[in-house]
Each structure stands twice: as C-alpha cells, then as structure tokens.
Length: 192
Ligand SMILES: C[S@@+](CC[C@H](N)C(=O)[O-])C[C@H]1O[C@@H](n2cnc3c(N)ncnc32)[C@H](O)[C@@H]1O
Image (cartoon, rainbow, N blue to C red; front, side):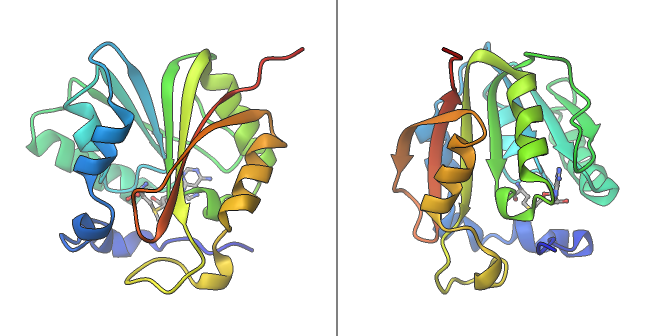
C-alpha cells in the first residue's frame, strides 16, 4: 500500500508556511502558463496550485479522487470568482474521466508517490494529453522536511524518472527550485 494524504487534513496543504519552501510564484515563473492553455491539475487537493494556475490560463480541470478535496477546492475557487475557469472532476485510481487529448499541460504535484496503480494511471495521463503536451511532476525528495509523507514512502527522483520514462514519457528538464522537491518536465514519447 502507498501513503495517502488524509483528506480531513486538507488545511495543512494551505499552510502559509508552505510558500516558503514550495512557492506558487516560483512555480508560475517556471511553468509560464499561457492564457490560451488548458491545464489538468491531477490530485488537485484544496487547490494550492489550481488557483494560481486558473488566474493565468484559459481553463483548469481540477481532478481528485477524494470528494472532500474537490469540495474544498470548489469553495475556494468560488470565493475568488474563478468558477468560470475551473471544472471539477472526480477520478478513480485507474481512470481519469476526461476526453483524449484535452490537456496542453498536466500537473502532478505531490501525487506520484500516492498512486496505487502508477502504470495504469500514467497511461491515462498520456491519453488525456495533447501530442505536444508538457507534463510537470513535482514530488518529495526522501530527506527530512517540515511536512510531507513518511520518508520511506517517497519516490526518489531517479526512480520517478525511470517510472515515467518506462511509461512513455521523455524527461526534458529537471528544475532545482525547491529545497524538498524535485520538479520534472516531461513530454509524451513520440512512437517510432
Ligand atoms: C498530498 S495531496 C497534494 C495536493 C495538491 N496537488 C498540492 O500539492 O497541494 C495529494 C492529493 O492527491 C489526491 N489523490 C491521491 N490519489 C489519487 C489518484 N489516484 N487520483 C487523483 N487524485 C489522487 C489526494 O486526494 C490528494 O488530494
């Protein structure tokens, strides 16, 4: 089994201290969302990244497997008047109910280590992504940190790259911008 973040602890994901070590401003500077882009925020939680993205791009599909997370994310999006920009989607461990090729960009932030069936889930990520899509994977280094899952549950960066590449993605960039997280940018592998 993998470690699952308890949805009743959603407030911890919005702790203002988090901005010190996983700044949404730094995230936006690095991913540079364009106004015409459609993003899919997989494992959106209460919307730590969904909301900053929604204010910059055309649309965000906020996707999570937990009703509580979707409910809180929806409330926050509404409070900020961003409801026309965000659509909420409940997924399962194996299926993402979105059409083929909808995503210009996919974000998986602090999700990879929680996947029960990574290969199945990643094949869904491929399916919903446009051929030139970029996939952003941010996850915890297995080092002591002020928050995060147990160290033994974290996926080291090289193992994450191996997992993603063996499931049909190509690593294009590794960004070293957060002290406790790796930040990978991938594309879909072009079939030869
Ligand atoms: C640690 S939280 C991270 C939330 C958000 N991405 C962030 O960085 O603040 C992980 C989120 O992934 C969700 N999750 C876990 N397994 C999932 C799956 N198979 N599909 C979609 N969401 C999942 C959890 O419900 C939770 O909201």
